[in-house]
Image (cartoon, rainbow over all chains, first blue to last red; front, side):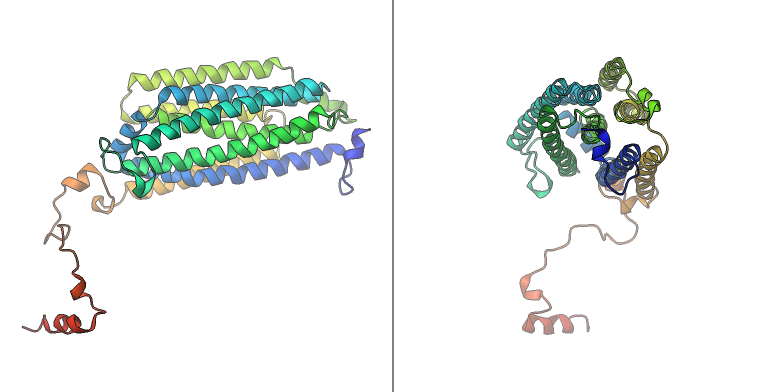
Length: 210
Length: 148
């Protein structure tokens, strides 16, 4: 099958279709950045209002778990980029394996996150009025954990969505759907995954390293 | 190649570039971790962390997300979204930072400040159910009270 067979009837050629798809993806990613921007604004305001609570709150989080998760997510971003690279070189099986490794890293990330959350729940670090910690009583302590759960929760949701997208792409790549020179879906799926990585790059110092 | 245009060849760089970016991202992570242990003075602590995170995300956006190769409208869209997030955060924090101190909750200075005039911030008695205005009988007492 020729790559031209993938051109929709409203595009003159594949090149223009690829450019349009990429721009559309960037517009979508811009809305994602603005979505997280709202939460980052809330974070900034409450960190400004309760600096001591945020400093102490970050000490109640596991820096080791946060650092390991950062390394895991950065490496998963590398494998996603390699998958895109390999599928462009028509090495679909290797690309599908790279996508599978990316999903494995994502599972490791979510596993560590689940362990962290379980630990927080046991300590009584719950969001808002459910906050029930005896030793961490600084003013604004519940606000830190509210924002912690909102930010990591929304990010975790994006991890799950990204995993789903990459899993579908992985199966299609393995079956040889992108063997014919049309690889835009893999490129856009990898871009979504890089955005998930991008958000975490900011969450890591803002939550764990205050 | 994917398209008939031979110019697209340069859009597929060698994989070494991805490994180099990955190594730089890991180095950035190590650097931001180590600097957070050093305890820099207050504003620099946050500024350094933000600067390193920004540098890392520039690497991700340029090379993993291919903004280095695909310029034009894609770059404009990304930069615009970042601009508006920075504007939002900057102005909202500026609003809080320039308020009369008592208008902001929870600050040390707010808690220590002695309010001018009568003690409006002191603890008030909890409203007694019998004194609620919507209850018919005590409502008359409330109306009578201020007369003398």
